[in-house]
Structure formats: structure tokens, C-alpha cells
Length: 494
Image: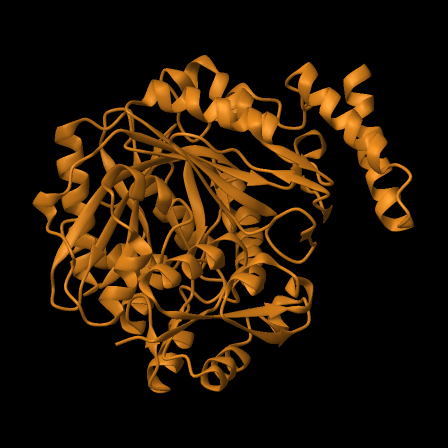
């Protein structure tokens, strides 16, 4: 039995896991860098261990320091959350070899799905449809052009070890291939330390649909239906929902069966997500498998009633799934918004600073997973995700209205956020009608355009806070606050 869990992460996901530990009566151990020494997750946990300087390589991406913290704290299990080492087979093997429990899949499963070309080859042999393309890396321009002609242009060049939209190029014509080939290899090497790239057919205006799967070590598999993740900016999801309004019952049966086949192909256990592209005709193609908990897991929890983190811990202890497939049904509709500290006016650049005012929404059907509070510092070193706002209601229409109400309740001051930009998306007729694909934002929004202040009340609140703090005794505090206040006042009067 697990007694104490070290959470090898930070921010909202670390807090989420620590809360699950509390409810299960387990001890929790947080790790933190210099930049996170006062962060929420360090205060929530039963114990906290300092890893090193703010740079990830000296803290959250230092295998030896994390393992040392686990041993010194007496933790018998490690939960990676998402990102950092969550999908690093070498790190998982180190944990296994140290006699600790990794709360996630085996290192061998992660290794099998870590290379996109290897995963495509594996899926093609297990009745999982893949996008037409190569199942091994291409080694020359000539080989790539020949493959592209075989499947027909346009095509995508993609990093074999890639993710998050990095190492990806669309090629319309053969004449573009050489320069794209060279630049994609360079980007892949820089981002992933591996310049292997492959080709797949470019699917016009697809939807991004993913299936949450879960399995135990006894060979029991289940899916928790699908999520719609097509609202993306630069291949990064910003809004997710469950279920997808585009997926009918027949298609749902097919895509979830394919996801289970994908999990069985790599002898998977614990929680994972199989991602697909789906075209207008509802044909779908394997994209990749994320061998970890997803950022967007709360929407699945809200429509199924399953606590995925608790289930992960139970599976890691060797227990069977606490439910059977027939026990599950879709209940209502859930939406998730990623609340970022970023400036929609300035090409969505991260906005850093202290959260002088932070008030999150509440009320019926509203859940907020956040890793920061009033006084927290949003640093330059990590992803600028402040929180995830999740709303549930009986149907999609009322869930959208609840989300809009909740977004209006958000009060964030000290950094610029994307809350107003999210409001625009939820108010757009095509989003409301479910008529969108992964190109929705590029099609409908000038992404570098101005960010509106939503109401006179918001403007008044901002101005009042500005006046309250403009004479702060802390010069740094006052300067930052005045700068932010002046920017918002400029927006107001323009």
C-alpha cells in the first residue's frame, strides 16, 4: 500500500494531486525551485523539498534531485502530473529500479509510444486507423519528396519525438520541401534532442478528438468517452469539452474501440489519452498517445463522476479498476478554459509579475483548479498557466452560459490574462453552434488584436484597485501596479 506520494511537478496539477492525497489519507511531498519557494503547492503539501534554482534543468528536470528528495522524505511513490518527466521512459525506469512506485504506465509502454513513427507503425498493426504517411523517419530530401508524391500534397513534416506543435511544417508543393526539411530537423533537434522527422498527409480542417482510457495491471480496460479539443492556438489547446457535440453515438463506439485497441497494443495500464484527427465525414485517424494524465482531465471527471487521480493511485497500488465499462454513462456537458497570464494584444506573450488581486469564480457547476493565489508570483521560467476553469451543466448550451458567467466573475490584477479573449470565443456564433475545427481561431480572430474590457463594472474595479495601490510603499510593487493600471486605463479610454 502507498503511504506517501512525492509530486514531481508544480502549479495547479501539483495542488490537484495533493488534494487527492488528502482525501485518501495519504501523505504528500512537494518539490520546488527557487522561483516557487512560496507557491501554493509547497504550502498545501505535508512536506516540501527544495530542488534548486529556477531553471528547470536544475530543479523539475533534474532526475537525481527528485529521486533524492523521494528517498529522503520516505516517499514510496512518485506522481509526475503532466509535462516535465511525465512521459520520460528513462526517468520511469530509474524509479522502477529504485524500488519506488511510479503512478502512471510502465517505462516500456511509454517507450513504445514515445516515438511517433514507432507508434504509427504499432497502431497500423492493431486495427487503429492512422493518417496516410511514413511509419519510419525519412533520411533525405529525395526520399521525402517521393513519399509526399505517393500520398499527394499538401503534407506535414513532423518531429518523430515531437509534441505541442513544435517541429511541424506544412508543405504545399515539392519546391518547398528542401528548406522545410532542413528547418524542421533543426527545430526538432533543438526542442527534443532528436532530429528524426516523418511525413503524413495534411488533413484539411480536421477536428481534434481524444479519448480518455484507463486500465489496471490485471488487463481490464475502459474508456471514459471522448473530449473535443479543437479550439487551439499554435497547436496548443485552450478550450476543451466533453463530450464532443460533433461525435454521434455510432462514431463514439468506433473511436473509443480504436482507443482501447491502441492501449492494448502497448500493454498499457493507468490513465492515458489517445488523440485522433477527425475529418468532416467523421473518419478519424490516430495522432498520438499521451501516456499520462491530461491537462483537460477535469471535463471527463465531471461527466463520468470518476476521480482520475484517485483511480491512478489505486491502479499503481495493484488494485483493479473500481468500475466496469457498463457502469459509465455521459452525464451532462463540461467545458474547460485554460486561464493564462498572457497578453492577447501583444501576440499572446507571457505576462509576468505578482498577482496583486486574484479572485476566482464559484457557484453551482463551477470548478477551479488553480496553483496560485493572491500575492503569488508568475515567473518567466515556466508555463504561464494560472488556472483551469471548468463548468458543468445539463447540456452544452447551458454549460456555455455558465462558463461565460464564471469568466465574468474572474478578477485578476497584476498580470494580463486571456479571460476577455476566452469570452469572445464562447460568444462566437460558430462556437455556440459547434461549427468549428482546429483552424477556428485563425479563421475568426485577429490574434494580435486588442483585448476588450468586458463591462463598466470591470473597468471601475480595475481603476479602484489602481488608485488603492498607486502609492504603495514598495517601489517595485507600486511601479509594476502603476504600469499595469496605466495600460488598462489606456484601453478603457480608447
